[in-house]
Image 1: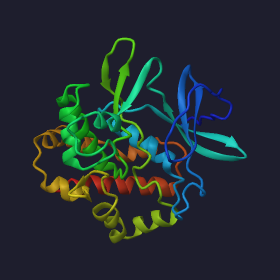
Image 2: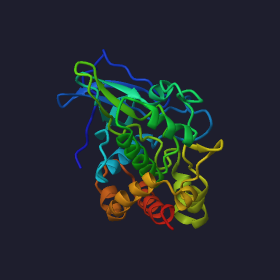
Image 3: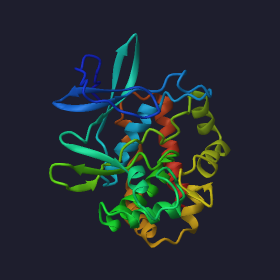
Length: 288
């Protein structure tokens, strides 16, 4: 596994990125524009939770999406030195050249029949907005929505909101397409420090709590966040069933130990943790 040092990569000052978690800068690397995502500092996360693993979560989540056959942002793990050496996740900018990202929050806000604004994550309203939007064939959007739901359930993503998925618009041609899946930094317990990882590895109860109790989806039913395992066990939406039929064979065929083994910068503890956690989520979240 070759290490990548992004420290001396030229900045791309004309590009800036929003988002709440950690600093983000654009650099030129391998003749492309990449967004470097830095793990949030303690000052940015004052609730005593460590998010130092968010770069690893971002890379693993995006990699797993691609391994399952879903178009997702290309990512690389590397280091950046600025007083301290940090592990960063480089995300290839898929809006270069000439594309504009239109997130689903904006799309939902444009549906005149919607009862809430773009940020609302009540499942029924999101599905209505998908059907009511006129940017892209609703069947294509529904397929992506439920595919993301299934994979996010596998990854334990607690922050797939309307602002971090959407469409790409080519303003020169007017063509609209689905954006690659992006922003996977809230997968795989990014707040878990070494103490939590050891607890999960040593205690079935600690492991089960992080599968059956939390993390939950950002989507809601009747004002309550959806619990992945419970919802998948009882939901009868035909589009969700179709997504499960497509993806479950791929999820069960995924070679988790090999994936973790080939991921750079992981400690032995992290390798054991991610292997155990992903294997357990695969077995338990999708149990009938």
